[in-house]
Image 1 (cartoon, one colour):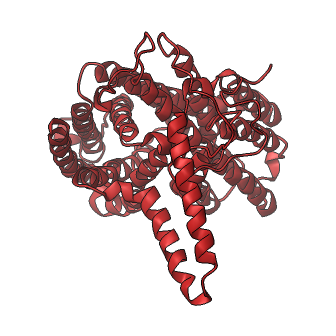
Image 2 (spheres, rainbow, N blue to C red):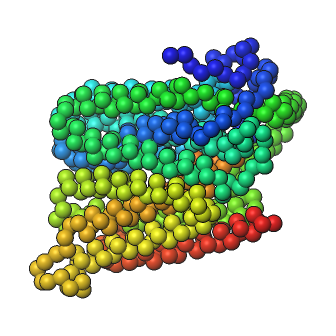
Image 3 (tube, rainbow, N blue to C red):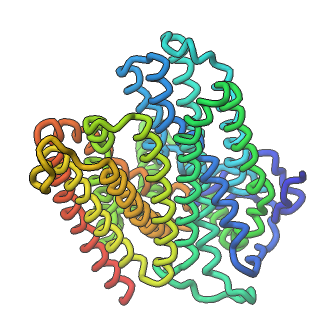
Length: 513
């Protein structure tokens, strides 16, 4: 199977990764030819590629977050060491640090995102296969466990970097669709807040990732119970390789072309910067510190100053920082409450992973349908308000567990387990709807030439306070009980709607000015 052809000139040495200027365009001084126009027709090929990318990404993530703790405990690994497995996800919170590198270095022949996605996805499959070579009976020994953790940390690092490249591909491709008419005539770019393709793309992203979580988590545990350790992991590795085929065949350069005059202008700016640097290098040692300081300041301003440069972006920044707080507080105590209610851990894994993820898929599909019919800023507020309401369902479950008489349940009786499963499923559906709306607006605020790094930076900002709130959720539940804990979660959720309301008012005013 031959790789797709590049839009670059045949004289370009595509075997070497190309540096780009701070705006993200490739500094290819060879003639790259005119940009090719967008293909006509619905973006089914692109949506299929995105579905398989995020599915392949979700497989190892589902294993690490859902299956791994149960597997380790089954092989008598201590709770303390199982708790340390949370550090395996650190690259996902820190990926914004290297996101600009992913945007700036790529092979012109293979494409900006494919240059990273193809090798990373194959590396991911190799690591998963290597995990299959472990002897699970030795997982309780420190040497074997730390070796496994080292491999899985590298797998998580690959997944986080893969996510940057995939997000960049999705953002650039979906934004490009609205810039071209079906008859290949340029049209005025409509507001991203009304771009139907972005809602579809983000729904596909959530659906693909959730499917990967289901197969890599709950379904993998079921497979592991029937197959050997080795063949179970080999099967997962094969699935990852299989889902590499669509992106291998996808002609990224044909769908996302960089305007030649933009490239030339940005090349001129870069050459000018190089000239200034050479001039600065001839100065005395005393004056070297100031250009270096300016260089660092320029890097920070160029890559991150965008997020606070005006009133609208500062308002959006508060939305990013507050969006996941209530989820961090509430979600951390759902499974412990289920355990205390006497629900078997096997049932928790099955119903929470499969039913909850299935409800998430439904929520993502519903959000995509609604985003075609309503303004995206309105959808973000509405879906978040719906999630706050569904979080209140946990309050009813907690009261039914701790104070059943308040709900009219007889003495010595308890609420049926299906209450918990239903509350969990509905809340997962609402959370998926809110996430699709959020990712759609995140994509709106990602600049075209910095799509991957801008998208990644915003997603990382979502985790800043959610991680902290997750850490303190156990202390809150211990002091207030589950009922008080979830009441507080709902109250915090209502407060977190205020930044969205304020940002929405600024956004609407900016759009009408």
